[in-house]
Image 1 (cartoon, rainbow, N blue to C red):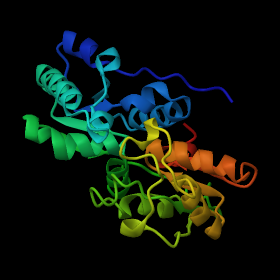
Image 2: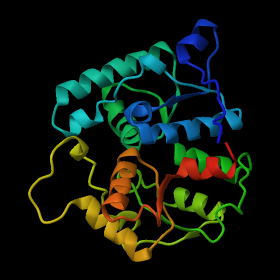
Image 3: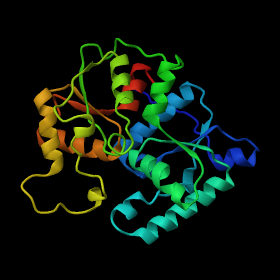
Image 4: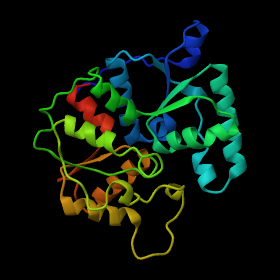
Length: 264
């Protein structure tokens, strides 16, 4: 299937023309470098273009929020990254930031204000849910009819920021048959990659966290495991492979589910 090309506005280009978008879309490290998550960033960008949302990306000016550095204990590196980004946002007079990564979202929303940040942070699931409720985003409810979907709660969306219902509402409005794992919402199990665990070797133990979580998934036997975080996507995809379930189930991001129904 041919991929439709889209023009993604870059903040520096708009700024040079005296234009100012309503939102900055913060792509994040995973959206920029991880081959699987690039597809999610592309899907979300296509939705924004489809809806004529006024947005831009930083492109080569974007760097890491510093979240993994702080989680791993390197506070100095975190503050260096954060102060650099805050100054960049001030230079472009950025007031609203959309993130697709819950780790970026949490760091911007809850930790940057301590260092002088003053901008609104919006998670993409929240934004998409709002667009659906307002009638701006109209979905084909037939595409996922009879498809069994379970949703894995990312720690930094759920427990850290209370975003539980929005992704579930989106799945229901897509027409999917939402089935809950026994451990869900505030009781959901971490995928095993948070807290900078993604970047280090596993510690001693009897079982990897992602395998334990995949066993929760297998108990409800879905067609699709829906995620809303690049870390969770990596771990769920690995879990599907580890349990030899590639022929039976897929891992899709909330943005991909929506883009799929819109044929974007």
